Amino acid sequence: MAQRIEQSRSESRRRSRVRAAVFGLLSLTLVGFAALTGCMERLFYYPSRAEFQTPPRVEDVYFETEDGLTLHGWFIPADPRSLDGDAPAPVVLTPHGNAGNVSHHYPFVDFLPRAGFSVFLFDYRSYGRSDRGRLRREPLIRDTRAALDALLARDDIDHSRIALFGLSIGGVIGLPVAAEREEIRSVVLMSPFASWKGIAADHSWLLGRALIPSGFDAIDQVRKLGDRPVLIVHGDNDEVVPVEHAGRLEQAAKDAGVDIQVRISPGAMHNDLFWVDPGAENAIIEFLRETLGASDE
Image (cartoon, rainbow, N blue to C red; front, side, top):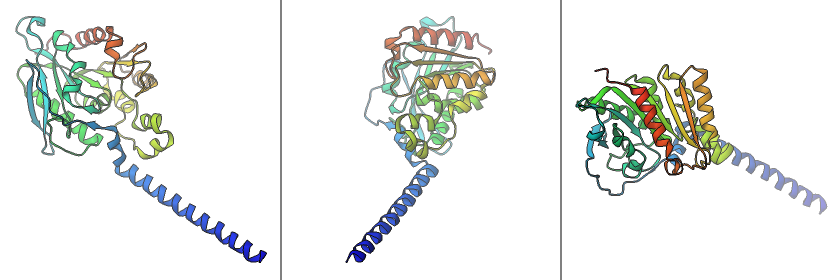
């Protein structure tokens, strides 16, 4: 009897080990599949297609991507009272953050037209009034390229004075376009993260690193800006993107000889930076005036 009991226990332990091995192999396979396909990256994005009104003095713009989608954006012209004469205004291209649509991100840029800058704020695919499409970083980078091309097709902006102002994940999406397109003369990043794996690990530790692939990381793209300057604004109480990401980007830029400035806003979280630190708006305005300078046209 004792021998049969021990044999039963031994067989039970063997089956448990086999089940654990199969479960482990299945888990590794699923993790590998998710990492290779990038399907977990969809968790980064929270698009809204809720109805919204276009504000006064804001122009609805529709433009095409290279893969045939129609995207929507808002062109917000500079306040004529802020301009010097009839020369076309400089313009700020704005890829927005990961949630909502243009109507939710408009408050982050509405100070710029009053300071003499036109703004082009657009929705990625699947956001707002834009066509639906695959939400991954490469297609969204493609959307940003298309937005820049739509800007360059206009005759009411100064083509020689274009900046990029990326909001949160929008800075990470916009940086590859700024790195490859010299039409963008300077870059402002608000609360960006240095790498995709890094921000995933901040929220999901090792699982995040395993599931989210690298590629088009801001820490690599910022090194490619050459002589074009960068300003980062970041809250030191940011609960979404820890402020340490700003330091990593700053060091990477300095190592590559890129002119970078970092403004840390004490007490500011991810979405209240301008309200906690009103001086951040003035810092951005002064940076854009200094880096865009006079018209070359």
